[in-house]
Amino acid sequence: MVNFKRITLFAGHYGSGKTNIAVNYAVLLKNKGFNVKIADLDIVNPYFRTKDSAELLNKEGIEVISPSFANTNVDLPALPAEAYSLVQNKNIYAVLDIGGDDRGAYALGRYRPYILEENNYEMVFVANFYRPLTTTPQSALEVMREIEEASQIKFTAIVNNSNLGNQTTPEDIVASDIKAKELEKLTGLPLIFTAVRADIADSVNLENIVPLVLQQKYFDIKE
Amino acid sequence: MAEKVLMKGNEAIAEAAIRAGCMHYFGYPITPQTEIAAYMAKRMPKIGGVFLQAESEVSAINMVYGVAAAGFRVMTSSSSPGVSLKQEGISYIAGADLPALIVNVQRGGPGLGGIQPSQSDYFQATKGGGHGDYRLIVLAPASVQEMADLTVKAFDLADKYRVPAMLLADGTMGQMMEPVELPEPQNSNVEKPWAVRGTNNQRKHNVVNSLYLKPEILEQTNFERFERYKKIEENECIYEEFMMDDAEYCVVAFGIAARISKNAVIEARKQGIKVGLIRPITLWPFPKAPLAKAAKQVKGFVSVELSMGQMIEDVKLAVNCSKPVNLCNRVGGMIPSPEQVLESIKNLVKEAE
Image (cartoon, rainbow over all chains, first blue to last red; front, side):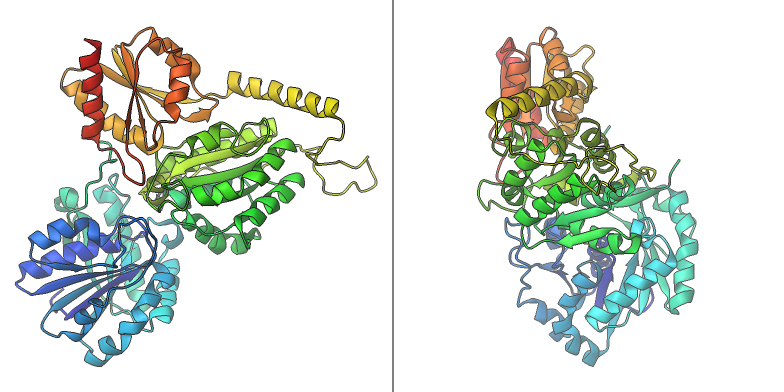
């Protein structure tokens, strides 16, 4: 994670934690002193979006660009015109949160020419090996190829975000590292960091840990 | 112990159904349950099962009717407006005494309503929904684990009693992600001697039908069906009690509302209020007995619902209006906060004093 590209795209199997990663990554970039904007380009997921973190992001001075109807009562996945400003305005650092799977990645198509032409981007695959359809490096690779096919953009890096929600233990994350390394080998792409819930990040003995602050929800039972 | 995986509630339903031996899924997409269909579309072809996106909810439920008549485990899923469309077919399935699973991941209504979560199909699910005298076994999960476990349970109960079962979830339960231990795959080898799948010239042919030409016979089949319903009420009621032992007040809530209420109960206990929670897991049969028992112990009830107050009627009936029952609710896709539930508990305490 030495070289910060101007555009960072997070894509992957749906439910792999792209939104949490994107939000935390945007804050990380901001803390490095960059001028950051984040866009929610998720056209698949109806609930639990980047917009849920808008208050936090705005407080950090990060502008959030969301579909006009995000968090409303209609499921109208129309992308906002402002999203073009992220790929066209070269003065800002852009974080793009892409919808899950190949279906979500289709949304990238219209931004692709600008992204490829400028060629200053990182296309990051977010992997969670505790998701039932991507429990192996091979099945994760399958999803990667589907997304590349749909978006027509090749992945350039991998993030390991393997977790079991609030029941994740440090051992779970360490155990997933073998699979992440295997995916690294299969694809030839670098594993740029392993994301870990902030409260257990210190107990995970791996290189390149990024602690994640997760959204708390009203139905998380506090017992 | 099986490995834990991280799943969306909707995915957990789909995977659990496959593991329960359901090889036939018919549906039509609607938010917030589309992941069930998407998951089935991905998995079914790989395991030799059937995924079929029907041309409408009406055709989907009639395909379910057909496969159920052939004696195979079958399901459909939808969200509120789509489940309304299925009601005619559900009544036919109930009238033909067939087991099947219908999943409703509820959203706000009435009408097209909205895509945010709701529990306002309680009446429709528990009181019949379609025409005629019938019941569905209605199960209400409150975690992703229960989305999986109760899906299997629903298939088992449906087969055992030859009645359609409904899994009544809401958008939040469908969309949220939690770790889940998936049930072991089972072969559903339940004997179904009534199934219509060929006689091989070995027996008299079976008939699956909900039409009876003689009213005397139709009356008799209704009576017999209700004898079965009585057995279900006696044997299959499931509920959870939380901090009820010394409770002076009782919150009643199911599904997502129960999770929020649990946080409110924990907070109220910290503030010295002796309150507990009864969570119906089967909405039909409704846990009347534990509520009647609680009515002898507590000073009052709060029914927490994502509706204008539907389950509250069953709570009042169960306690025979012997104690006050208040409503705490949000509707239209809005969700009560733990603070709002806590406030309702405090109001109940104030009224009782």
